[in-house]
Image (cartoon, rainbow, N blue to C red):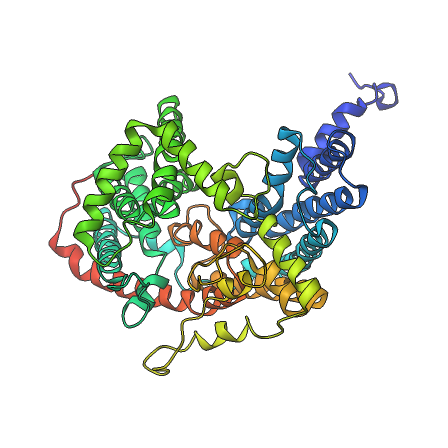
Length: 511
């Protein structure tokens, strides 16, 4: 029986709104930005112009992510990490603590304007990437299809060679990375080795893919990726590196989601346990141990690390509280009234505010922090006197309290937004982020592809690349765009060829 459509009941307005939100994810960001705007003004008493700029930053982030394909692409993950680490987490945390978000910033309006304009610049680059279908038109050198064609034995050989290379890299850096007087060594073979941050994550991603594939999706942890996960964690603990320790586990999670592995309750319980251990044991241990275990004596580092880790593990709460108080007393740039080391690490706008304030007072640096990135691209055999620049340290000395007067080594986490503003003020923050995102997208799409789904190559840089994008200065962005992809290609070619030679001589018996 036919029904007159004119007699049909109209669709409820609430249903239409929900459907629109699902179809248009940018609406989530608009709603979230509006809610944050209202709460900052009504509850926290934030100045309306500051809250408006935060709203603009949130919306620009949402539009940029939508254009880049969300966090399932490398550029999208980079933009999302920057937004979280610099602004979003800190603003929400300030609401939770009931503290005004524009206090104790020296230049709250100017700082948030820098973030807003910088994100709009990234948005413009994202729209260019979307309009010209950059991630669809550029074919990567290493294609995912080649990995899928490998037999089980060939894949196992590739996994094995990757783990061997990753382990050798970590061992050489641990044993040779520090001089007798405690200075970081960067010359010789250590230069390219330290740039190969993709090796360990690639071994974790590839071995986890191997376990998922060979088990038919029933398991995500086996002997082979247990080794790949354990080795970087051990070296991370010995070197008191929080990111190095947690990075392998993050890549494991990325790989599971990228290849469609379904987590079970026991998986979530295990991950929650790992998060607890990292927050209350590994993190305070790393902060306590970093000035003690980073010496030229690897054996002594191992012994000290073992003793300190046991000491912290026996008294996790006490160690975390003691280290927090110590850091709070030494910190001149603390964003929250109560010092929480991990939260401060994800509230980088405090450091950026210090650089913005210094720039407004003392003027711009022009090319002083940009040309070092270009100079450092040349290999040492072509440029024997190549200097090792610490542009983040240079910028930090512009602001009182970010580093000590005699500290010429500590690289403070600043990000390239503050560097761009320090270089050319508003012109710099308008143009430089646009150029960086365009170049980064093209470089990594051509190398390994930017899509993370079913792609162990892109997953290999899915932790380090967003971290560098968010935390480091323009000089490091230049290196990660022009140098790292070339090293990745050369390393992958070598590993693939060696694994092809090895595969006829082994049998893959591990799952």
